[in-house]
Image (cartoon, rainbow over all chains, first blue to last red):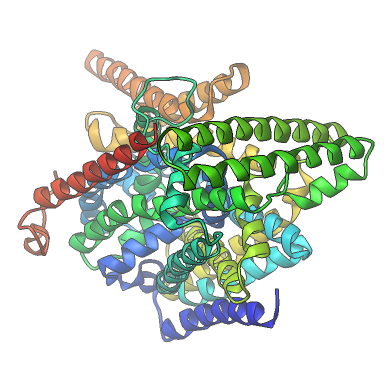
Length: 561
Length: 43
């Protein structure tokens, strides 16, 4: 990086922060701080909803996923527009009618205080930990690439977010997310244009599409019922539909974004805007990954993209074997490059034969990468062998021109900040409204609650930074937090689905059903090998089933009495 | 379904919320078809 990159990176971030603070200056009350005076327009809401979901890992990891496995991951998002429609019809009018600050406030109205407190508590634990990971996950990658201490990267992300989120609340979050989305989308478009421009002169954009397609990266839609295929249309639709309903309908970090709408119309249009644009946005990010793959068919890629981990393994007893494998990998790359150059210049059967040869050589390359990962693990059992998160950042740092590097790093930091801001804002709201105001200090002034909200925002920010800083001390932390999310999300969704669709079920039945469901989900997780994704519908289904049963029993008991 | 205020009864375009939802579903189907066409072009 040079001075131009640093200027663009820090200039962009500082402008966004200062703009957010400036635009939200002036007197506030609790409603303006937590709900933005309820006057947000639909495009602000839509961009805010998208920015809250799109964390830095979206931009670091998704291109790498397309590089390795192709673009099939897009199928995961196909159910999102349908989930937005369901929420527009059912959830938004309910939240508006009750004039709630949080999703969990609705649960007290529908059931009772203990159910509200339970759901709010589950959210605080799960989202509190996730906020730390939102900072940590990109920080660990950026630190490795830029050579910065992890603490510094954590602090840059965390402190900048705390400044404008504490100062301006929901409005500051939404305003800055508009700019952050502009940086993210603009940056990715620039990256794609530069990437295509940097392909060898003999490789046109059409040739690049051909190469990506023939090498299996444009495998967007798979209608088969193959259970061994990770991403199919059906697993995407079924697996993600309930997840999106739960995330956008019951997770306060998203609910808060659209509760700040001027009206039901604005909130609905905001969610539908998200439903319209999310899939094309993911297509762009995945397509960039496919094009990075094409780029690395003509420019030598490293055999393992996490250079720091590879270097460490090279210094070990496995070093010689590793270096030999790398040489073999580089030779196969040269042969594959020649095959592909032939494939794009010939036509018909000659071209097909050349592509077939390239595919065979790709399989050999994949086998070598697998061997390399085995050697790395042998040298250091604690090493992270998943290197797809480093593919795009390696491309950015090594091949993009100065200035664009700074812009792309601004994209990644913006994404981290936009997600963290949405999370901190939600954590503070839930802490203030569902716990502090409702149960601890019930009759203070509006000004007192405003100050409390700011304090809770600050505290959650500090906790998130602390968690991110100490995260590296714990093994498999990210996996642990993902597990935690899967363990709780299903139960929370189950509570809300009962609330919306099973009107005859009351507070006691759903509360005890949630506790039982949570216990069963934890037991299933500890004693079986069921994939995490299935814990969501499992928990959800158990809550609904047991709640209905318990309500039946309670009704019979009342009749007898 | 909850009752809506008059200003929320219909969206600013297409005359009804149902039409807007159908439009979104239409765009989704078109996208899936385009992506499927790209997929089968290379299989």
